[in-house]
Image (cartoon, rainbow, N blue to C red):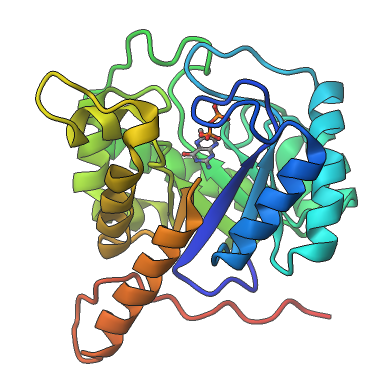
Length: 294
Ligand code: HH2
């Protein structure tokens, strides 16, 4: 993903009636734009605009409806927000329209397995590409997730999808890999992926994005035993997961509430800068990507 200063915060703009934590709040395109501008002002380096909820049990939203929701929002944010805009979709036709409207990144939770046209489209457009691990589909993924070794399997999947993306013509410096917290994973799987995030980062070979924001495992692991926190009380736990992820090699975090994550990025960067000789700094330092060719 060129032109991004790592580590970075991706702000979530859900133009949906049914997202698990903010469904319906930004379905109106004017409110979605306003929200995106607020997230950019709060420190988002990328705005991720989606028109389809992928919460557990959700059904796909037709491409035409996704386009109707996201395109006006992307057009205005691309013109006004001053940061890159990403489209959160698995459908290449939606991605193509979004790229025409000014998006420069595609966030694909199927890592190119959902639509055979996706990788070639992203390559042709010269766009950034976030590719994510998911076991199953949103409709079924939380029914019975199973792994022999979740870290090894997710790492191997990301390495394999990186190869597929590069093979399709997307250069490494446009790629961001994502272990897909909450996508076909139990609470224990999510916690193991965070605990061993450094191994996932090493296997992926490209910058890694982590998306813990307000997810169920935050409520379970962050709440008192037997009393999971409801979704509206998961911001503190989200921030704890963000700090952990940044300290263990994540280059980007995807969150609903950008301001605290931006504070974490700045604070951890300052801590790292205070000890330049530290061989294991508390943020993953990757040099800023070179500017895109004219
Ligand atoms: N999580 C969600 C959606 N898209 N994309 C990536 N790359 N990584 C994630 O962890 C991720 C994602 C789910 O969060 P949200 O968009 O708030 O919910 P919903 O799918 O219900 O709209």
